[in-house]
Amino acid sequence: MIELGKIQELTIDRITPHGAYLTAGNDEKNAVLLPSKELGESDQKNEKVSVFVYRDSKDRLIATKQVPKIQLGSFAPLKVVDITKVGAFLDWGLEKDLLLPYSEQIIKVHKGREYLVNLYIDKSDRLCATMKIYPLLKTNSKHQAGDWVEGYVYQINPELGAFVAIENQYHGLIPTQIMNDDTHCGDKVNARVAEIRADGKLVLSPNRKAYKEIPGDAKTILSKLDKNNGFLPFNDKSDPHLLKKEFNMSKASFKRAVGHLLKAKKIRITEKGIERYGK
Image 1 (cartoon, rainbow, N blue to C red):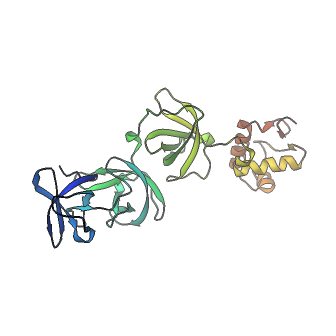
Image 2 (cartoon, one colour):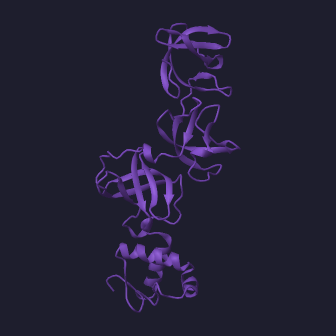
Image 3 (cartoon, one colour):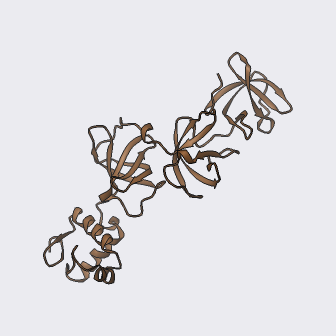
């Protein structure tokens, strides 16, 4: 059986000026064309070839020796190369770009950016991409607390945090309170497993313990503390204009940075202001 959206080994049934017609097993009634431009000298009748099967611009099944960046049921970060009335088109390594319908987008996508998608077959028997991957991810990861993992951010909920597909297959979440301000859908992240929930989903922390990896705003506060003998007369009740003038950051950014430093045990808050921890 010829399978749409998968790399498979098929047999050359006959060769014509248009290319070779390939079949699966003894099923000679159903054949797919491998265009002549992809035929090699060793491609002869009854020989087996490894191909990927998809649909051409006229929705006809066609085979290619090119290896796509994604196969049916799998996940991959793909770049948006065009946006049209029917949706966005993604570069998946083949001549015909892959459609990401508007109905399968969870955010507005932008040309030139990568987004994590899954490949599926739609109701019209065509290959399409979807960003709705939450129900497709698994919870049986063998990772332990403290492990460092990689993944792609595929959705952001301001109240919950950044949803991450760990290794493109497992559920992960970076909670809002420790999520970096410049986190976006499509970002590749390296994070530490902070907790394994009862349902098997992983809670992630992108924060490093090293001073040099503390987020930028927090570095600014630490630097000023070090220049002022470990004390600054500011806290979360300080006037926003004074914070902007002193640190060049908004009050919200200041509070987030202070939160990072408190969590990292770099500072402590007193009634008078901020003190370097251990002062």
